Image 1 (cartoon, helix red, strand yellow):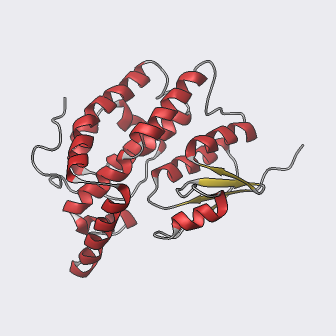
Image 2 (cartoon, rainbow, N blue to C red):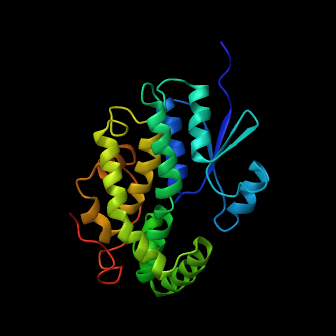
Image 3 (tube, helix red, strand yellow):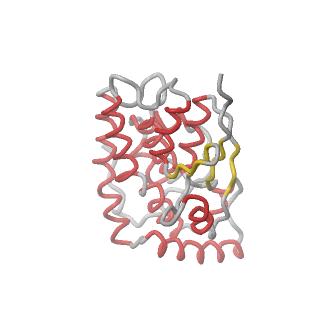
Length: 246
């Protein structure tokens, strides 16, 4: 029997893709060490480990081999420990398509929408560290940090409004994937983790709770990611920006 590989997971505490990678490792029963990158310096730190252009979290190092990004991580974990499969047959192709959609089209909403809401309620940033609302001095810092984050992620009021307007259609697609049996089954697959981790972050925004309540995305998110700190009270986004719940 070959020895178990030595695995290190590099992530950030607020990162939902990092959270997805960690849950995947735990579902597989694979031992690993988690190392937190330094917020503000994580891009350079990740690039030093994973190569030029690979600046985002998460990444894993498997016996010295760097694997960057949630989808490559899921695939590598299936090679290390085939069961339970993250791309299970006979729906592996559909899971890969859903995983790709969750990565390429949904995942960034888990960054832009929370930071968008925090622009309007900066004192709530303290809750994402497991504490309470920030005091005035802390809120001053949060305002500066949110401004920098808007610039980093290319957030604008117009983009936020478009993201919010398009969210119901994305939630409909998640429901369709669940109805088709691609996600939401007894065990978690790669698409469950990819999609569920993003929805879990969106559940921290009070304005979005009515849109998410009772949907497949909420059920998957709360099942596989029960604990995630943070809450932006309802009323953060300007009136009329958030679509009405169906």
